[in-house]
Amino acid sequence: MQRIAVLLFPGFQMMSLAAISAFEFTNLEVGEQVYDIAYLSETGGPMQGSFGATMETAQFDDPAFDTLLVSGAVGIKLPTSREGEFIRNALGASRRVASICTGAFLLAEAGVLDGRRATTHWLLARELQSRYPKVRIEEDRIFIIDGSVWSSAGMTAGVDLALAMVEKDHGADIARSVARKLVVYHRRAGGQSQFSTLLELEPKSDRIQKALAYARGNLKNTLSVEELAEAAALSPRQFSRTFRVETGQSPAKAVEHLRLEAARLMMEQGRHPIEVVAAETGFADRERMRRAFLRSFGQPPQAIRRNAQREYQV
Image 1 (tube, rainbow, N blue to C red):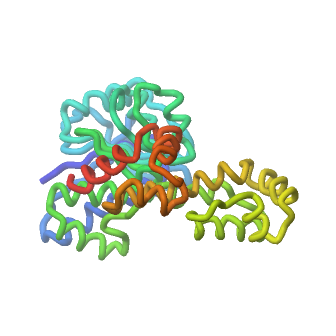
Image 2: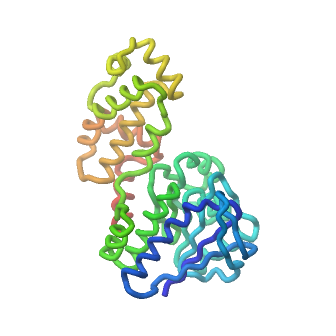
Image 3: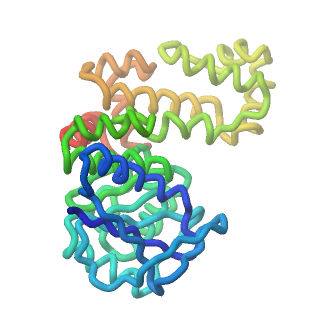
């Protein structure tokens, strides 16, 4: 039996616990208890989450679990000295240590992410990178596996991470069956950018939304201000001014973000040559796309593809 410890703290986010369903349904699928879940905290006893619900916990002591899963919070939560020590000890005593969403901040503060690739919720990924420069943050990943350390993006991405653990432990067929019962994707395609770019822009008016939808569907075009303004039925000057007021970005920067998320998805999911990906997403040539990838992701397109293939194989 594989024992999974879930580290909770005052104000933990209840959605973090959604990942536990993957282990619960694996027990049902296999027909025996292959996973046992323990809820731990520094003090033990009732632990109140962010929305008032309470979980009963045991006081942590021995970190020798198969897996330590660190829950997330609505905002940034740093570990106490004892929590940090427990996480550090678990790195050597457990087979794997994992974080859900902003739980990555606890792992980073404990030092277990130094020199490793990791991810967290896209809204706080740059804050995590700024605070912990030794960590190699990839803000567009659903989850990342770097050796024995796993990290997931938002709260629901914890389910993706848990399914990947199930697949590694019990095979793809079991994981696929569990995913069907949970009515979720077995392997969710793409990164957080497919959800975050347009959400981050949050245009208020229908006209700017229409221009962005046009841009996303016509990435091979030049997508000049004049072309986007025509889609929005505004003059170029009025469009540029309104676009910046509503989104906080220039039209050119927003278009580049849309091109990047489309190009990254093509690199992760397909085997198209880089020249084809660059042409299909409007970068014109591979060198221009490579520079854009380095600016935004800190890696060239080839590295993005290799990492995606490696995680798929794991």
